[in-house]
Length: 271
Ligand SMILES: Cc1cc2nc3c(=O)[nH]c(=O)nc-3n(C[C@H](O)[C@H](O)[C@H](O)COP(=O)(O)OP(=O)(O)OC[C@H]3O[C@@H](n4cnc5c(N)ncnc54)[C@H](O)[C@@H]3O)c2cc1C
Image (cartoon, rainbow, N blue to C red):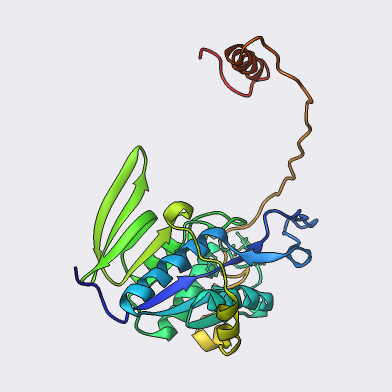
């Protein structure tokens, strides 16, 4: 089996609010991100882990790229501590309000500036926006092939062989590099950051670029460049019913629970 030696792998990292914390929704419908702890988006850690495993096997260079506010630097520093080699943050006040199209456009311009790459890996979706659009849109901008919902892949002689989830099963693809993959959460177990990793990362810098640095047009970013407008954001409130479902046996309890769910209109009857 022959792989590609010394690949340049780009991993996309989005900093998101920690889902274990309460995130307030402001009057204008935007998330109050400042007050919550921010972390690396879950499946972006899987994307980075996949890249690190390739680096161990083939000796690759990993560049992590993020678009976000200045505090997204923390997410990139964590990625450096996990083993990434270089980190780029595209941060600019003019990016405020960017939707997925504007985000993908800016990431595309940044990647163009980075020059040669063999593989781009990102998560399938973010835990806050969750559109799963950024990966596919970025591949379109770059004009390269893509495989989404990948839960397993390997690099063999300039090609990626990927197993991706489709409705009712899996699809196996063989794609010539460069290629963009969106990685699922069950693809691997991301490594934990070690103390020595943190020490090594201290010496590495996060490079910050503005939209001028990447040559992005102002009219294509921020609110002006975003065709998606949020019409309404609703807060859902849940109230526990404090109901005890009873029965003599486990089967009877399950039966009574199903009956109750049908009565309440949660599921349809006829089971
Ligand atoms: C109208 C509108 C206004 C918005 N305004 C703001 C705002 O003011 N501030 C703000 O922070 N967000 C804002 N957002 C959200 C932000 O632009 C989206 O999070 C972004 O477009 C990515 O979409 P997503 O979260 O659905 O990513 P998905 O498509 O679900 O993400 C898939 C993968 O793409 C990669 N990815 C996604 N986003 C980034 C990123 N920024 N950098 C690097 N990799 C990434 C990650 O690997 C991720 O796992 C806005 C969204 C909309 C629709």
